[in-house]
Image (tube, rainbow, N blue to C red):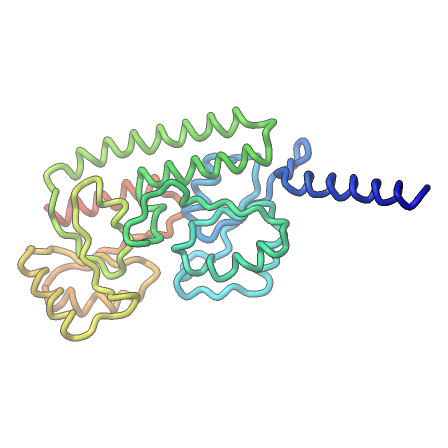
Length: 281
């Protein structure tokens, strides 16, 4: 083979490799897609769409605080070995810190599930919003279809089913929370704005920029809570309840536990809205 012919063959191979690289990786028939997410609520949504076509793991253990979680080498390897990493988005600091390393390997597909979500002050807790969860589910379905076109109708039907479940529950919750517009929910960690916004309920958090408030801020919170006739302080299960108990004692109100990192969002929305109705009326 002449030198010119060899060069032409090399150029053709290079073009072929580049074109293959740009195409989403298609899974083999009957091969399940391996996916990872950061937290259990995202796992729940992904399971509603992928069902038995995917194997999905949450890399942050149940009960851990995502804001302080430090991934081990084993966790990083698990991400690198997966087909897809369903991301909450750039506003979620934990994910942002490890995404660059994943991109450089060019193996794991990254799916930004915050695409088309209207962020509130860059708040990452989008999975807790009922409307936002449907957008997350749509983004998950799109990525699964991209990698598994043969099962497109399967993913689309599951997406429709999930959206229908969310809409049905939202109608129930709207009736449950009717009349609570402009009421104030006192919560330790600010995570519930996406859920509360459609129902007109305001969130007042004790934390300030991820830290316990200074004395002056705490005094203002207590004064506003008294003015609003707050009956309870809500605290997430991932936080030390002692942080809320001192405020509860000062205001003579009760402490109510809630779970933003649930493994069943539909159940938690139902439970959370019931607790709101009981404690904001």
